[in-house]
Length: 170
Image (tube, rainbow, N blue to C red; front, side):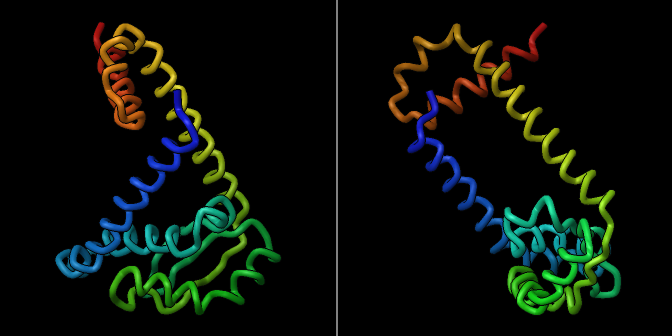
């Protein structure tokens, strides 16, 4: 059973992995050179990190064009509010990237893009939960063996991996 402590441990572990990834990002960008797709993907990742989880469903990176990051927002109120903190966001993005990849953020009112991102986030979360549920149901055969694993996080990961593997077998 998943407890608050084990969930907190999982979240800390994921954050640690993301921190490691973002520390390596400046080197990866230098190695990638001027590849537009790589630069855009890095800018999008840095935007999500700089903006935080609270803005993820309300401000969606759309395009990086000539050092201008275009971000879709649902309405003019969101645009006005985010324009006020734009300089801080540019600074945080570039700090994460280790270079001045973004010099300006254009907030574009585009409710459809924001709606689509929210739907994608819900679908992704739902699919992950369904897959975990299915994996845990399939792994019931291994409950006795898994009970020997004292670390709850490790035990859950073992059961998820085993159940996922069992689900793929015909």
